[in-house]
Length: 525
Image 1 (tube, rainbow, N blue to C red):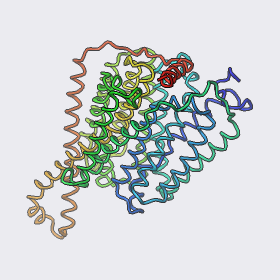
Image 2 (cartoon, rainbow, N blue to C red):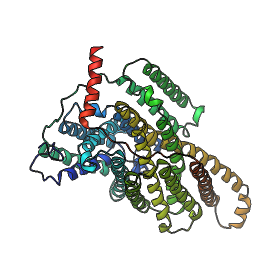
Image 3 (tube, helix red, strand yellow):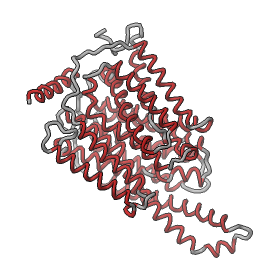
């Protein structure tokens, strides 16, 4: 049993099948969650919820996932994997049932936050059992290629499954589909897993739970301001002011507590790390350039090109192909050949530039669907290339291992939450202003247009004007983003760095010893 690849699984399961069974579990947990944003249109149309409500719930799940990293290693040394997987599966089943029925926004957001916590717990438990199967030498650059192939691949599969199920049935069926998969996981775990724990269990003592609550509150306030800012007209609304004040108070209180308590949720050593701040900056830049995906690309496909939901969803296959090729390319060049961090970041932003430039030149009323395959492939390729590089840089930042988990939490905040929500909010505001400016300019010639369009009603003329202004605005925004991306690539070319990936994950015995020493010191104090 001790020589088994996955000793938690019973011996009647073939050895070669064990790690693949765990990979299947990871994919199921990856596509599970509280709400499924690919069905946001159908969900909004059949409930009293707004699109902002569903987006807030989706980001709440990401905040919950990011917060979990700081305590994941402690949970691993406290609970057997069988117990953890069963608990997580049952909680996710309940969360799916609640999200399918509730129209209360606070309940929906809280449920998605909990779903994110337990979803990440289950994924971490599964992945840590097969780490040596993926990379026997525990090379972090290799490991993160595998992780991001999982994460981004599952994200695209989630969007595809949700879109197809919502088109052929109802959006609620996606929740039932996930519930069925999770019940299959529960049954398989009960039958195939043993209560096996290879290390002495450590108590959940000395964790700064209140600090975690404050960090979660701060991130939720940032998400609220960015998601609802345009709806409430930004700081003309008392709700945006209230969320801003609460977020600032939570952040200041957290930093003040971190200055004197023994084990803060995220301490100053991690916050002062230069790699963390570079990661934040690069993620915000990257997500700002890729924000058209969330701000107006769907409107372009639906309102101008008149694609139905299946045609829009089918484009995700090319993003998925970009993710797969990007992960393999990063594995070969970055993990095996050890290309420099600078080289990988430049290649990533060159791919982003190609994506934006191609969209700028092809965006029109009559363009074939196949013209979008290559730029969408470049978008998936670029993101996974940059994400693997930045995540590896956290592991090579010189932080002690307990602080590495905190670095993962900050990476989640930057990559999964702040980058996406801030980039989308900023670009959304720019898009609104440019669109209204174009509408105003084109509206000045509406009398001439009305005279030429005999037999058309004012509503038809206004609809055509709105559609044309939307197309012009989209092309203009793509052009501006292309220029910004080109300047960033030039700036990276002048940046000097010869750092290459060399990070190695310590043995689990060593990690456990570090946490055990911390617990012993806390008890003695």
